[in-house]
Amino acid sequence: MENQNCTNWLEIDLGVIRANIKNLMEITQRPIMPVVKANAYGLGALEVAKAAGQAGASWFGVARLEEALKLRQGGINHPILVLGYTPPVCIPEAVRNDIRVTVYNLDTASAYHAIAKKTGTKLKIHVKVDSGMGRLGIFPEDGVEFLQDLLTLDGIFVEGMFTHFARADDPQLPTTDWQIDRFGALVAELQAARLKPPLIHAANSAGSIHFARSYFDLVRAGAAIVGINPNPPDSMLPAGFKPAFSWKTRLISVKMMPSGSGIGYGHRYITSKTERIGVIATGYGDGYQRIPGNTVIVHGKMVPVVGGVCMDQCMVQLDGVPEAQIGDEVLLLGTQGMCSITAEDLATLWKTINYDVITSLAERITRIYLD
Ligand SMILES: *Cc1c(COP(=O)(O)O)cnc(C)c1O
Image 1 (cartoon, rainbow, N blue to C red):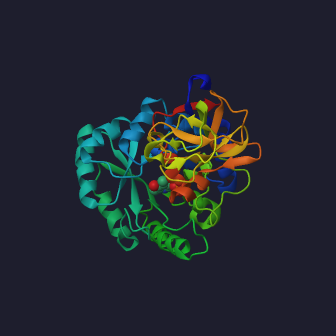
Image 2: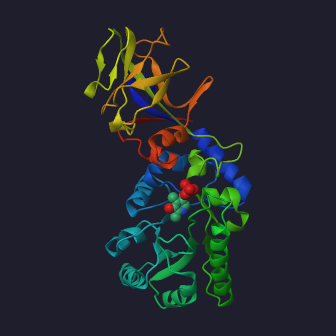
Image 3: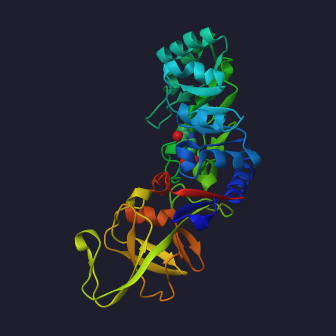
């Protein structure tokens, strides 16, 4: 779609996605599993996956089976792993589409086995280990017995084993090395017992930047691929990685408001003189948070949002940009000339993290892909 038709759109640079993948392959010298859950962090799962595939990504990770099926239906033929929970009733569909699922509980594994047997095709699974995340996974000390038990279930094939880091984005802390030690010890034990699954993985984006010991056989990454820093300033992407997106809108009204005019719901802003007030087609219904202090870029200049953010619109103070007129582009997220607004900037203002800012970008925002 052309952006002339749009009043609110994301520009996603697939060339940047491909470059970020290549950087990560170069750094880690491992196959990459882009994690394209939550619609590839808001950027569009299928388009991001296709670009990543062109750049040499070998796997895809998602949180839920529905997300995996969308990739398959969209023509992605790579191996896909569901990192979260898959209900047993969904197993025939997973098998039919050759989707790998995650296992961390023996009863669930038995249920998968029984159902997969009926389909006549083995279900491929990856075992999740809780080496210190405190979320999904078996404890490392139970790993050998768990893998032995899984061996008795001939409806499933244990293709992989993985863990996830709680604090890799704070690399000064000892936690990640401790997690790698615990997970690595289990891998060694399984190797000795000839029970080691073929594919071992642990690193997320932060792990792949800061902990070479975390690479094992495969690297899973989301943030590094879309180009956001895992945890600024403690965990920054190395030079060469770039954000793959900008978020734009348009001025849809510009008018001179007399001194003393209330602006928007609750009159949270009142003009103190005659002011040039614009309206932009962006609101909290797009994921633009209803928090005071937002700024946008108009004609290369930073401009304050004034009054409350409405669902579909908000107002901006244009005294500093006399040339601004209806239809002009406005940058919400990205760089223009000397000015830039990053997902981190919005996250700081909104008291959240950059991941949350971009995964909250609403579905109604048009995604435009630059190749
Ligand atoms: C989301 C997720 C990732 C990717 O994390 P990034 O910090 O975006 O690289 C990797 N592994 C698992 C299990 C995840 O849930």
